Amino acid sequence: MQRHWELDELVDHFTLLPHEVQLIREARTAHNRLGFAVLLKCFLLEGRFPYARHDVPREVVAHLATQLDIPSSSYLQFEWRGRTASEQRRQIRDLLHFREATTQDGEELVT
Image (cartoon, rainbow, N blue to C red; front, side, top):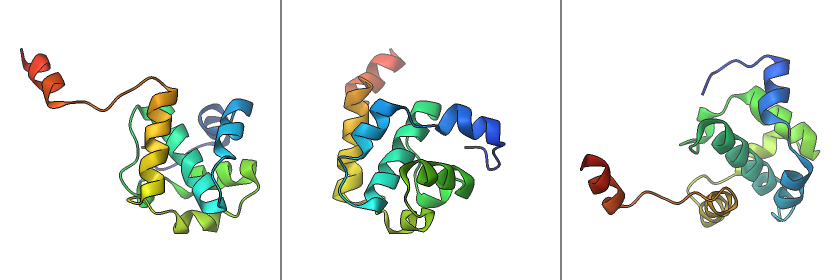
């Protein structure tokens, strides 16, 4: 992911739509709502999830946090390898009709 974003780029790529906000609000804690927003918008942009917290620039996190009225510092509490993040990634894949690749997919690709 690019490291520096102009305001118009943030607005274009990281503005939450009403149905996304509704889905995100289902997460219980502020840090999980913000983490969910980051995962969702990054997946929509790049077709993959960020690997770790530091893969997402602070300005992206701050832009999403402002929209959710959450302090951007709560992002530091989001557990990337936790059960909640895993469930959120599954929800996002389901929402967007994606599935994780299987060994069979790899074999068919080679063929």
